[in-house]
Amino acid sequence: MDASQIATQIATQIATVTAEHKLQFPPEILAQLRPGDRYQFSLTETEIVLTKIPLSQTDLDEFLEHLEELEPNPNQPTLQEISEIVKEVRQELWSN
Image (cartoon, rainbow, N blue to C red; front, side, top):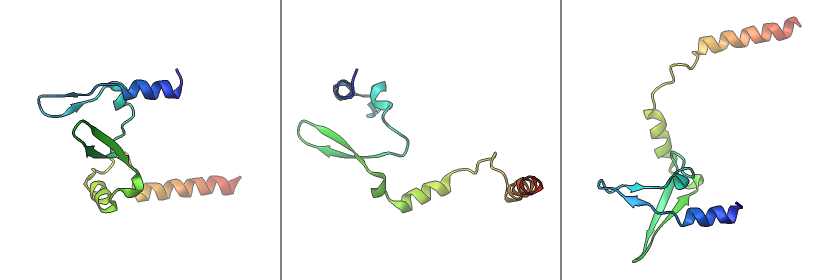
């Protein structure tokens, strides 16, 4: 199946509106969506068109706010641990 056949197949998929008024997309469409992607809705009498908003147009303040809300990664090494690793690597490199 070539790219045009895939595009045609995806373009003809059907989304269903759930009782909670959410769109339930087919798996082929969901595979194309990434968390954080933003879409603009355009409405006409017979169509709802979703257009992906390029990353460069997203709001930096909103991104930074979201970043601050994230929990710290418990597996991330501390600055002290990173410093020790760097010292060890430097010693190994200089001793050879």
